[in-house]
Image (cartoon, rainbow, N blue to C red):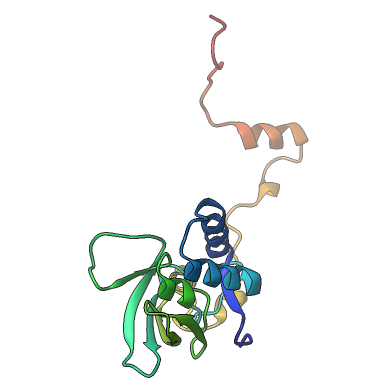
Length: 187
């Protein structure tokens, strides 16, 4: 697990944070401070490599504020309508603080009244990147929840050496679609 001051971000999430910093310099000081901490401490990963226990955009996360009960929210990019009480945008200090944290990891931020509050990720209930990997495994025939994705075997469905050995025939076969379009006319 990364140290307490670091976070793990997908390339997409990191880019969104950089754009937020560049395009919205008039944000509150609290948001600017959290944004700077996230960007400067981020370990940036491809979506295929991000652990399933890390909060990414569109993740459903159960978290605690100080020692309070766990709350579950869906982390969103911006303000959204619908699902009232279920969404937590990263334009909110709590949402931004949770982005990139792993299960069990915490971040302390100032609350609305200025007192410190500690947010702790209890569980990443759903992460879109992990769900995508599971769908890919199923589509490729791996068992759900297994780590067989790296061991799957590809099967040849067409071999180019079935064509004649003549190089011209191979090139023609690759581009022959059966449609004879002369292209745009010189009108």
